[in-house]
Length: 73
Image (cartoon, rainbow, N blue to C red; front, top):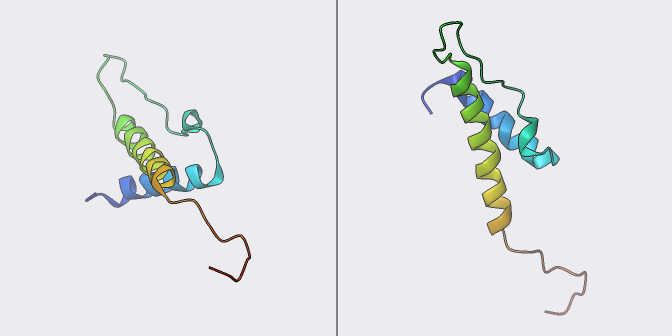
C-alpha cells in the first residue's frame, strides 16, 4: 500500500490473526456521515480485514511441522 496509516492497519490485522483473534474483532468500525456518505473508516476496516485474511491464508497454506524430535530422517 502507499499509505503508511493503512499499512499499519493491515499489519495490525495480521498481528491479530497471529494472536488468534477472530475476524469480527476488527477494531475499526464502518462509520457513515449524517448524509449517508462513506467516511475514510471503511478504508481502515478493509485494510485490517485484508491483513487478517492474508495471514489466515498463509497459515492455512503453511506445511505442517514434521519434526517429532527423532534424529533419524
